[in-house]
Image 1 (cartoon, rainbow, N blue to C red):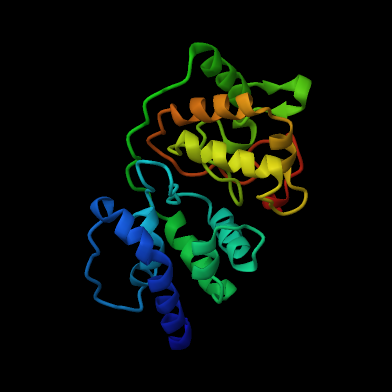
Image 2 (cartoon, rainbow, N blue to C red):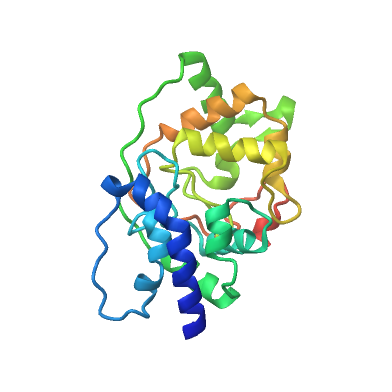
Length: 241
């Protein structure tokens, strides 16, 4: 990464994360000392301010866990924020001028991390909603053309290489928020966008139910993504190309 990119990244970082620092000061990790300021660990401080020093995410789920997710998925999201196809202003500004090789380096760094998961959130779902969520996640709903979450995200919800993220350890509010964004067209992915097709077939109660059930699952000891094409996916998905 050039010195110009480092300087620009640092300047953007100050603008973007200052509000987050003020709002989350008590929960922020202590910033470590680095032997080399040009190391990847030092250069991702703009990421860890919100996502945690090890990419573990926040307990409230507002900033999701990014540690251990497939590098291809993380790169796709960084590129989408940079190119404006995914919208969240702090992220859009933070990566606006970063080149592909640097985004891939960031993605590889966080993909390699395996920090402990945050404690599970307390369930607020009623039994009927929990049952519906379990069915959607593990069986799907053939009447709606909705495959099971585990058919793509893996039986342990750890994702699949190269581009399907793990759902283990995510908070219900975050999962529901992302499904809703796909459902209303605010979030898109590479064509064919399998998640858009699925989300549009889910009702709001379905989204709440499946998000609540997923958030209650105990993450496995090994949260590594499944190997590429371990199973035949039920829908064509551009992120796996």
